[in-house]
Image (tube, rainbow over all chains, first blue to last red; front, side, top):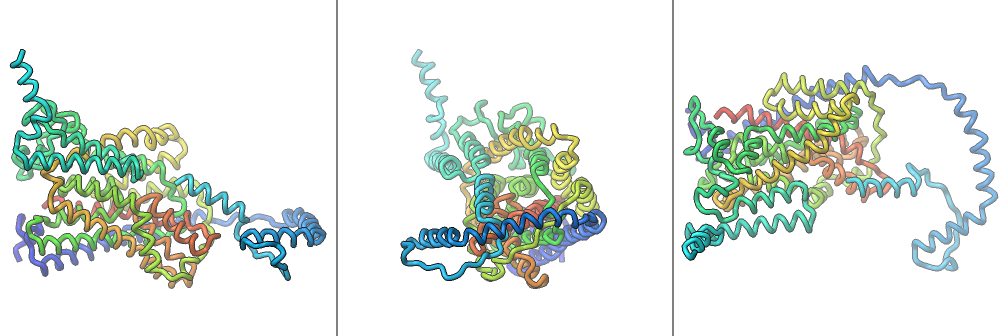
Amino acid sequence: MDLSSGSHLVTGKGITMSEALGMGGETVVIGLGIVFAVLAILMIVLYIFGVIFNKKPKADPTPQKAEEAPVMQAAEAVQEEDEDELIAVLTAAVAASLGTSTYNLRIKSYRRVPPKRPAWNRAGINDVIGNRF
Amino acid sequence: MLESFVSFLSNTGAAALFQNGGLDALKTIIMLAVACVLLYLAIVKKYEPLLLLPIAFGMLLTNLPMLRDSSAIMMHTEWFTDSQYMINEHGHMNIDVGMVVRNGGLLDLLYLGVKLGIYPPLIFVGIGCMTDFGPLIANPKSILLGAAAQFGVFFTFIGALVLSACIPALGWGVKEAASIGIIGGADGPTAIYVTKSLAPALLPAIAVAAYSYMALIPIIQPPFMKLLTTKKARGIVMEQLRPVSKTERILFPIVVTLVVAFIIPDAVSLVGCLMLGNLFKESGVCDRLSKTAQNELMNIVTIFLGVTVGATANAASFLTASTLGIVCLGLVAFIFSTCGGLLLGDIMCILTKGKVNPLIGSAGVSAVPMAARVSQTVGQKENPSNFLLMHAMGPNVAGVIGSAVAAGVFLSMFNGL
């Protein structure tokens, strides 16, 4: 094989189909291999970073709990009192989103879906993302 | 009186338009029309206007009809591509910088910054100042997605060689194929950096293709993202990223520069500058430099880069079959890069038993932050309470490093040929 400078097998000009596939395949294996190798080494470095620098701070959780407890109880109490009002609000909300009248609806039961984020919070984040980028 | 009027008329652009006959006049008019279409896309459609507008106007300036050897010519593309204007140094044809400086127009002088490889690294300094590598440091495995998304670069390299074998008239060799492939890195400065070294004649077509497709990412990517992922996988909520300490953020750019330099020195001018900018930002002691690099410096260089790259697009180099081939292969490159990232995303999803959302794989193409935003948008369609943006920024910034490394690989393999 002639691999002297200027040969068509080096410059790739005027090569045949099989030569093109051969040269291309070789470059892909070497090139993609090097890219993966470099980034894999960086990945290992980053894992080492994580081990060295990501020591979990030892927090003492007891004082926080003591503060939260009474607030939670108060919240539950409020919820029980406002049962009728809550059902009225839910009925209105469902009616509005289905585009029907509240007379056609009856709320039999409701259950709080554990949210990852409150709806308004979510809408706000979407808004920021939409504006920013 | 009459004589001077006639001499004025013969010096007008309208007279110059027809000096080489009707065909050249037609080509000039087509190029001016192409420039106007690009201006329309930039101004009305807002496709990457900060780059497309200078590129399009540079194209307009360079194609204005001028008399031969007129001192009003702003750009002499042939000085940079035609070997008869170059000087032979130890068997390598190099541009005659002295002649360019003595006789060149404004754009010739500014183009030296592209040709000598000054602008793209400077842009990378600015990008580094704006990049937050935190999501990548917090989730190291996402760096591999940035590598997988370079698949399109290498696939298109084969594609270009095969196309050239089918149509020998294109005259493409490995250098041209590498320059076309790098479009798939979805990184304008990197594509320009590779092309100006390996295939300067293709520079305008490759720059226009790269920047246009980057603007079209929100249209190109979603169909393939849906095709290559399952509905269930798209809805996966990933666990929150750990907080990253300042020490890690400061060490990261230094370590990356060292690692890349030890393995692939040709990538250092890009990666090194990217990391320099990032260190400006993360160190917290170079606030003024960081602000300048990401605002004033970057804007100035973008103007120079855009106008001069556009100005290389004269009829002789742009209205060719090569341009058509580059436009098609550029799209192939983008699609396969997207698919490469997505497929590794799928594999990671399976290996981690559903902890990785494969959609973040497509963000491995380095168009920051568009590609990450597309992952976010597609993911949110499946699960409205899902926020993939920060998870997708990991592969996204890894893609910048990945495409710079791919560029370094091509330069080290083919630049000496």
